[in-house]
Length: 566
Image (cartoon, rainbow, N blue to C red; front, top):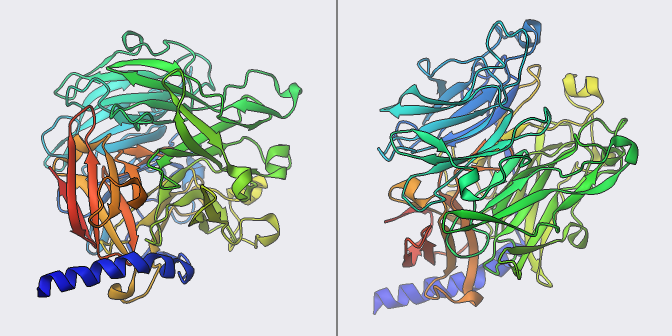
């Protein structure tokens, strides 16, 4: 009787707490801890363009790979007391912060993205890096010819397993099991700035060996370009689909500002891809250099469907590009079901929900519940205020079927303040932004922190600790992480969280997210999902494994822990 009484009290508290908590939530609080965690010195001398999170040595602490462009003049790297040009770095996490791995393969390259994920099924997380190589008549250090590659992890030590592309302008990589064979395949996004190549799908043949299967899977062999990709299931059939984010403008700059296509969708039908309608995806462009940016996927209005957020990679400055002068909001797309062609239908809702205008680039976006109140927030790698903090659009819930967000203070031009120092951004006449970033719980306190990868070497990359909520853990909102016991096997899974005792009831849905290994623009994440639960003590969890791998349901799961699903 006592157990039943305790359970009943817990469920009653869970039923009434979220609404009350929503009205009284303290602000999202981020504190910079770059120096305190040991990241300041290892990230000197970088034009950082990739930020990947994952555990490479199976010690339970999140590690980070930061990739950089090494093709600038030597003098650009010797600022802030830097000894010079740095290679890509592996930073090993632990209870005292981070330390650089001296044995990580050292390359001078143009690293644009990647992921940390187990690609050979041996239990160790390998590393895949995308590189932006171009043809150069003179390339004495090999910066432009260093290829995209897969690095094998043997007990925490890395070696090159396969070099993939030399002198191909790859931007990011998506991880998926497109053919349901149990091995994780790779989709590399090729940009169009040099106008020669197209994106590539690589089949994992085992043993960290990959084969180009782009044409035989129905994908275009030419003209498929962009800056980012989503590999989440967009149709609800448990198969990973592809959404490639990138401008489809072909008109010259003289045509002026136009609404241009911003994405292409390819639906997976048993290992072959069919292009479906993507006309809902558009944004304002002035030239072919204006691109849509990173892609983030998550259910924003609790209807169980995968909604989307797209960043933007608009070229120029507010003085040279009227789009930046006027401002352009990050694009939010609501999933509205399946269309007659079998593809997902989306509707852009940014203007309906009043999302704030951005007057600089916002290439990287992620969906994360930063305050654990049960509503996804939009984390954008564009600055607010004095340029040292990222923009977080706080999720406020649903009104009239639409998700609502609070615009961050300091986003509007009138709210900007003077940066604490002069940098390359001020020299360009631009508000600051970060090339990419990633979310991670580096201190294992249950709150998602943010790493922001800085482009200019005269400014630091920034690790922002999430201090949202009470200083007393028992008084904070609660959370739940979900992953599979073999995390790589969970990539592509869909995780739904329900009110306790009501798994499968659409009216009781609290959140729905896919498990991915890469996200946004050049960002990599651990293959798990994080849910904020508000003040709930217990929830039900349903995990739909990819490619008809079955459904796992767990009932009355306690909060503040990681659930590992077999």
